Image (cartoon, rainbow, N blue to C red; front, side, top):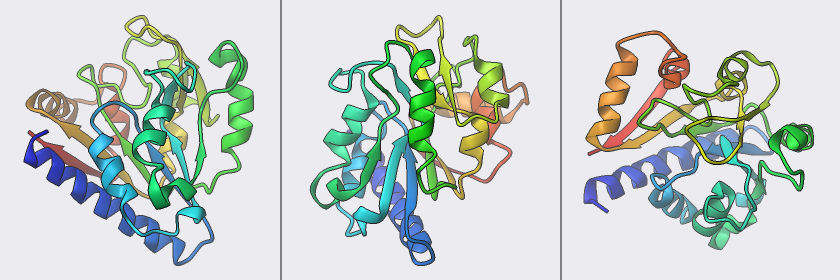
Length: 221
């Protein structure tokens, strides 16, 4: 990993730790919503090293593939292996999957689980794909319109470009966070973000759903 990406991850961890501390000064619990993929791994590891009151922090995911918790494709496994380590293991982690066979069958149970978290979230950390998706708001998803407009916190999603069905927080629920941060690496992602900033069709590049709210962008080459 490049030094620039490592330094960026450390800066992001510092900002998130500061936000969580600030909110915990005035409330009993705080919620952190993170994203999966390879980009956040060094951020997870940096944040886990902070001396925070982890037992008062709830952690969940912006979205998840509907796979077994031990699958290599599981975002929950990524969080457990890289963030919930050492003192950070005391955090209250809420995964977005259940024993149900499909996300459509499991969404009600998972919704009930996440409604007990410390909303509004202190911080939502978003990622972005080369197609402009964020969370599981994919441009080719049949449920994109629903996920962009729903008042429900969670939406079951199927996307032709993705092998597994998914569950995602709706744009509306993610919007409710106190702070939004976008963590991306590489010139290709910078180009996609530039394209997103240059237009307003959210269905073409769903990251646009978050460009109207204050969004701290963390980018490294």
